[in-house]
Image 1: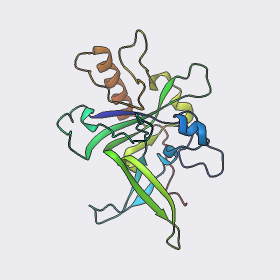
Image 2 (image 1 turned 45 degrees about the vertical axis):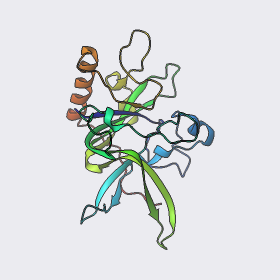
Image 3 (image 1 turned 90 degrees about the vertical axis):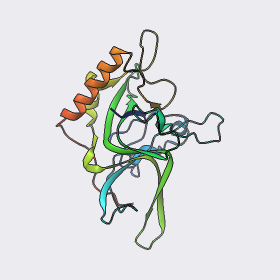
Image 4 (image 1 turned 120 degrees about the vertical axis):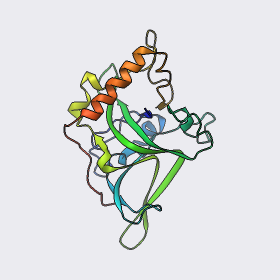
Length: 224
């Protein structure tokens, strides 16, 4: 199973914050400094015509920060660490990945991490891609960076109340916990073959995603 866990800022709708009602929380120094988040449109459906397609379709563009080790160089997302992709050390992207977006719940002293949504059958990129959006008079009004792409029909944003269910909680590595997010914003969930508890966790999360039939909060194509 190709699966990637991504830690992003906590937002309710992920359809921008132009009106100031969906302020991002957590997600790193950039969010704290600017009050903004590159992932603010992660669950907004966009109509795009991709270079390898003859017809337009609706997609979600997902951003997760790949932290720099020296403060200036943007790190790659090491897609060869995704299970089943070990041979892709030179590839620019990998297809058919389940990308699970997670965030710390900011309004509690425990700061537990929960699944906020996911992309099925996603393309995950080693380096950031960019997509420009234009106004009616053909001026660039927004440039979105992303390192995951999936059709909107394969994406789900959980309602805020659903996310707090303990079944969606994702662990962070600490004493007594053998798996979970570390310092990085990406977790490749490696080692399931030798870690029965991790395997059990992955099987459960995957089953919950496959069987989910609740509300999906993804917003239709946005107007910039």
